[in-house]
Structure formats: C-alpha cells, structure tokens
Image 1 (spheres, rainbow, N blue to C red):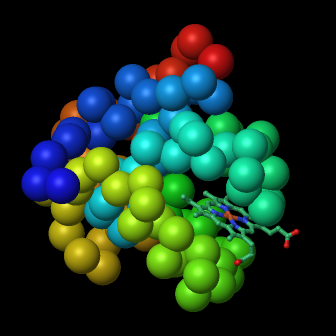
Image 2: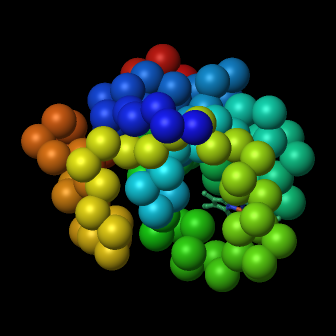
Length: 105
Ligand code: HEM
C-alpha cells in the first residue's frame, strides 16, 4: 500500500466501472463497493475520480463507514498536506483543475 498517485492518475478512474476517489489524502478504489453503498451508487459516481473528502465528512459517516475505507485503499495522493484537504485544488498541486476532467461517464 505504498503506491503514490497524482490527481491526474486518480481522475482517470472516473466511471461506474472504474471508480477511484480521494478521501483525506488517501486514494480508494471503490468500484466494487458502489452497488453496496448505503447512500447509493449515483452519489458516489458523481465524485468518481475526484476528492470526496468534503462530501464524505459532510454526511457524518459512522465509525464503521470510516473503517470500511481501509478495504478499498490503493495508495496515497502525491503532495497531500494533512488538514488542507478541504481547500480544493491544494491537494493536486498544479496538476488539474478542481472539476473532474472525466468525459467518459
Ligand atoms: C469509500 C467511501 C465510502 C464508504 C465506505 C461509505 C460508507 C457508507 C456507509 C457504511 C453508510 C451507512 C451509514 C454510516 O454507517 O455512516 C453510508 C451512508 C451514506 N453515504 Fe457513504 N460511504 C462512502 C462514500 C460516500 C461519499 C463520497 C458520499 C457522498 C456524497 C456518501 C454519501 C452517503 C450518504 C448520503 C449516506 C446516507 C444514506 C442514508 O442515511 O440514507 N458516501 N456510507
């Protein structure tokens, strides 16, 4: 689990069939979890390939939900500064805009 990804890497995985997201500087492959997510698949796919930290925290996910994250971890985000996640754009250095560049959904 020592892989490091850039925001551009993560953005490539932006469909319901290949869905990665960033939460607190960690990169998760949640593809297999989409259909099981209690909050629904669609809400997750909307954030596919993006930083979902704010959305994840805003929901007030339970401790169980936070523990579940570990099952999907694939690596960490390059250049991640703890605590700066809410400042969208700061996590990806100059590599991409805030909005997903995904065009194949
Ligand atoms: C890998 C990431 C995620 C995991 C493991 C996860 C897991 C869960 C779990 C276990 C629940 C049930 C309630 C709880 O235990 O807190 C839940 C509910 C929910 N999740 Fe997520 N979630 C993830 C990402 C997201 C994201 C990115 C969103 C953002 C929009 C989201 C939106 C919701 C909503 C709206 C509910 C509430 C459903 C309800 O109460 O009717 N989740 N999630």
